[in-house]
Length: 128
Image 1: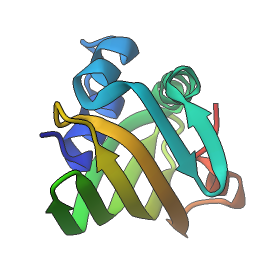
Image 2: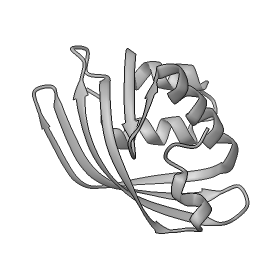
Image 3: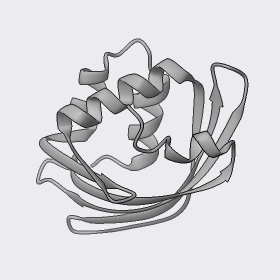
Image 4: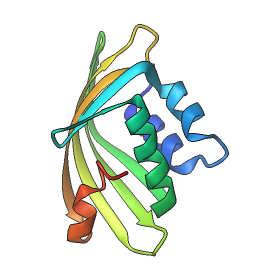
């Protein structure tokens, strides 16, 4: 079974793995996600991660609360981002998800809250 901290850390920091390889390890083939009301399929999610890799120098995920029961997954985490331009962004994320039978994420619903950063960083969770 995957968890969001491992998945996001690999997606954003493991530049030795391609975006597609990192996604395949943690997200089902028919994965879809809703972030701040915006739906994306797996291809759109891959575009989003590729975009983030271009602006994020390093990210740290701090899980504050986590709950797993069967295929249900929920957590509250903070993502601390050092951007390539030297600025810092911190977002708190409330996530509810479903795990596929193989333990990868099948679907995620998340709401983000900007704790630190510019107004332009508010949409970082859906930017591509």
